[in-house]
Image: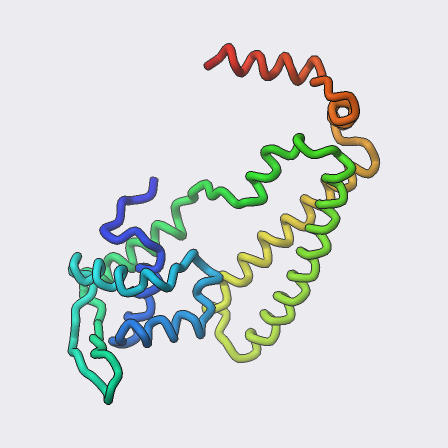
Length: 215
């Protein structure tokens, strides 16, 4: 089970991992994180960066090193990671790597209510998704091959993982499409009849009734 973190926003993890390299002010942190495409690895709300930095400092995970002003620019405070921050970063990373957590992708949410659409429409929508996924995969594989010529693999592991997950999704969507187009998907006839007649199949109604009784 995931621990309750003093600052649980994943942007805090990104900030800590960046400041391990050297002290920076928040504007510089944002520039480095953007340059590395960190928003592709975790949900980041850039507008909350200063709040996250302030919270990390309040909990002793960061410390202000100096403040300075250049010309008419606003005063900027440089922060460094503390020993407690290094311990938090290492512990958090260990947890993220070792402890599996169930995530809730938007695609899974759509699949959970798939029956509200007729089978033929679902087939077409899945074809569209498959086309887009395959195009994205081709582009990302090309990017990975290009980056791999200059960047050590340890810094590309998350890209490899994303490609593996997307490849598995492509295979799964292609398999479901095959069942829909060949008519081999169990319950397909009942699903189609429901949308054609408006009558809920008896087996489905019985299943829904059992679920109501168990509540």
